[in-house]
Length: 234
Image 1: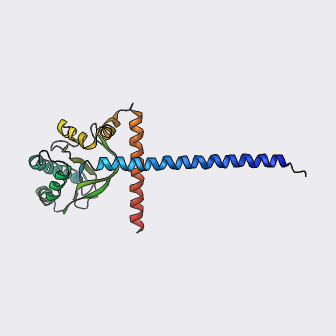
Image 2: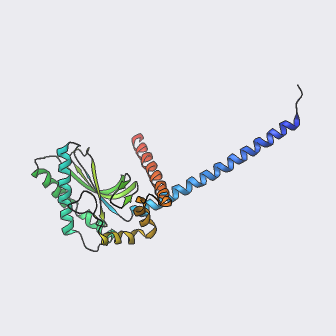
Image 3: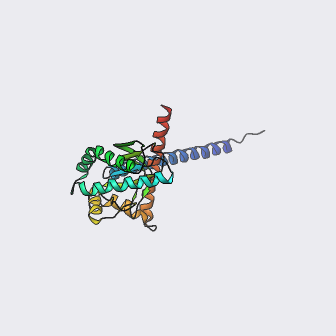
């Protein structure tokens, strides 16, 4: 069999070009991925650093436990409406909420007892993982957020979320009241860019914002899943 040297060298040249192309494409994709990770983490961190959330977890999904969760919610928010420091910035609001944990626990326990439940109540302040959560005209991406966490009984039921800073929660609503003053405070905390990111996401025609939001969502969900996997392994 006669070996065609020219064809072999041509094949090797083509193979080398393909390898170079794949190598360049891999470096480009890696650079894009790193930029997405940096953008997602930085932007979500800015959003998370501008809010404090309230997270109430029912004892179970039993209708009675779910109804009790909402009664606890109403009592806590009524108290907060009366006592929340007007004009507080985020640090002041966070300090107030930390100092209010015993009172919040007392209120929640009182509601439980009034409704015939002897389940324990655990109230704490910390940093917790949250999924993406949509409110009326506002969406917070998945990630780690500071929050007041109220655990009723075994805390295995459906959750209820709202935002304690800025004070968007109201006592007679199951989601958020978009108070203009509170939303204005949120905009000042976040800056125009990040504010538009979480408020314009609902605009189906705003493709650039939706893409940026999805990048944050995907990156943060991946981080949460990785952290959960590591915690289970170790």
